[in-house]
Image 1 (cartoon, rainbow over the protein chains, first blue to last red):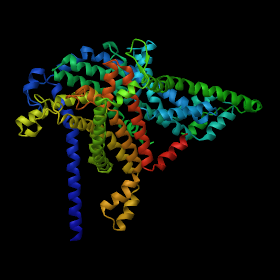
Image 2 (cartoon, each protein chain N blue to C red; image 1 turned 135 degrees about the vertical axis):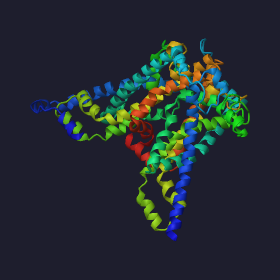
Image 3 (cartoon, chains in turn cyan, brown; image 1 turned 120 degrees about the vertical axis):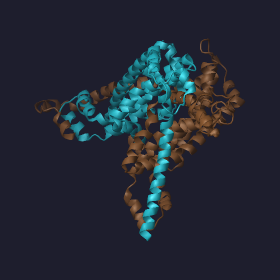
Length: 280
Length: 323
């Protein structure tokens, strides 16, 4: 009798958990479903049709329209700055981390202190001076400006994660190479770099997502359409297309496709990149 | 991995003997050079675009500047104005409410969902994959999506209100004084709960199951287990998640700028928006720098306080190891 009661209770708890979990699933998926369905309508049918049921004429016309109204350029710009920032921040941070661990000079030790300090500074607090500096050096409204600023702001997290990773590479390996006469550069290239694959993937994905979705930095540092990246381009669409909601929804979905592919193709790495950063 | 790296060690042992003699001097020299080559580019970029801006923000707060003309030193005038500015006081209040409300909404839901997807049932792994979808949308994208959904005339919720009898959904969510701020809190929650769910899932999976088994043998209820095992074991996760959550919402800008621009009236006018407008709309860079410094100080202080208050020995020992 007791066991039956216990089992019944356990099943009820399991059922309630399942239901609550499903409620959240609906909360997450319903807006995305609404957006996807709306993007397949024309403006005329959008305001009259049931927005929750795929009825009436559906079309991918809006995707075509937004792609040819500049979204292609924005997409390209976003890809350029994301890849540049990823490569640049990984190389700079790994190089610095290697020297911070291995170096003996005061300079490398001081560097770590300064970098830890920067970890707590929100970008909003320094965006005005960044704008002033970028403007003074003549880089305003260029992709170079975005690459430099976003790389710089990725450095604290990247270096901190990498320093703790590089520290775990057995010292004997490095010392063995060193006594064999390998230069510091050889050690970096042939030992540190090949061994750092996992941490490069984690940090790279994390930085990549942040750069891809960043809005404030492009908003402040760029203005023309030719240098707009996706988040800023989407914002401009809002005023450009006004009440043409289907077009805007199509643009939002199109802009999410690269990350969606990344998420589907390498979900494990993706999740590690996001969560691993905070956990270590 | 180890084997591979040993393979790539230089094979030539003959050279080793020859080079040993002048090792110390050479090594010290190359060390220093390598430090410069390795660290300097990083520190230059970081110095110019992170450290220098911190200094400039502080200095600029003592000047009057419209962005193009000459700088004019005005001492504490900007700061004095800040402390007597009812708009800034209001922004601070809205910012505080937003941060606290965000924490109160997001933390319990994230813990519950994190534990839910930490379970090993097959269907939960599938749920988890969908739960994380908001993470791939940009903030602007999320804002535009919700704007369409919440539109009081043609939005998805308005349709449900008019056609499915759910009349409570008929609200001017982002446009009315009573709902705008809470709607923003809800949208931020929708955006960030997935990330914190992920953190709590990882945290939960790191708690050894032996602890629960031992406790239930001793007759501890589920609730007692939660209080005495789960919470202490999750301390690290809670601190990390709360810090990111609070600092993140204290400096939150994107969705508010895109959707309400501080409105209706000044109901959703947060400090970061105030700063943005003071600098890039009103061209009062000096005063905007005061707001920026305040924003930075709030961020740093909250982070430090959380780490200290929670008696955070495990984090500090990790940090010490790094330095």
